[in-house]
Amino acid sequence: MAKWSELFLPSARHFREHQRSIAARVRRQNIVALERAAESMGRCPLGGQWRTWDLHGHDFRQVSQRVRRQCEAARALIPDRHVGRVKLTWLIDGGQSPPGDTHCHAETMAEGRCVHVDYVRRTMGGPGRSLQECRIFVDGRLEGRGGTGGSALGFGDSDLPAVAQLTESMVLTVDVVPAVTFPIVEVWDCLRSDSADAVAE
Image (cartoon, rainbow, N blue to C red; front, side, top):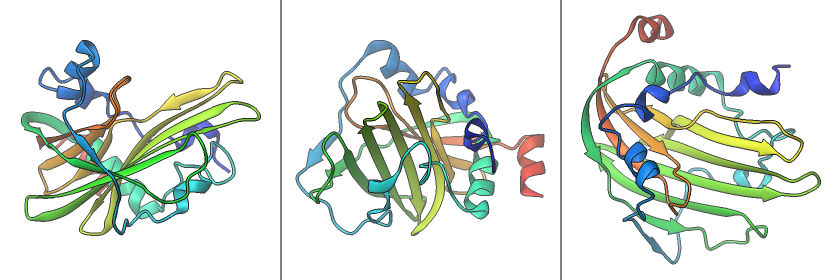
């Protein structure tokens, strides 16, 4: 069984640290998000599985090997040009959710593909622990994820932002910014790297 820290994906910090990253700029300036929330949500490819996510047991980071390879390949790309921020209408899950939990999603078309983004935030007790997870579905398939988790016992880590490929050279990132209600979604033109080619092989 993999160690807790080994389940996080390779770093995608190079997207956060890019000088054109809007998520980084919002994080620095603490700007209120421009997206607006709706009152209900339709059918979601994530389903209700998020209600059982935790830091152990039903670990929120667990995905299939196919999805993990896709995530690693997208993260290995190098951002070359910032295409822009995707303005979304976020729909809040109107179903039964445990106290302190939030699930919302948004959907749009990008490069002729249907992109569905989920954002989950959970807070649990005994001992106190919390998690945030972003998932990106492209044409109905899970293609990217990233999240953060921590416990009152002193452990925690993050592999945000979530990154998913839309085309061979274009990716979409989803990042969480403190004090901003909904994630920041951005599109990038990217260059391939040696590590990306290695993952693809």
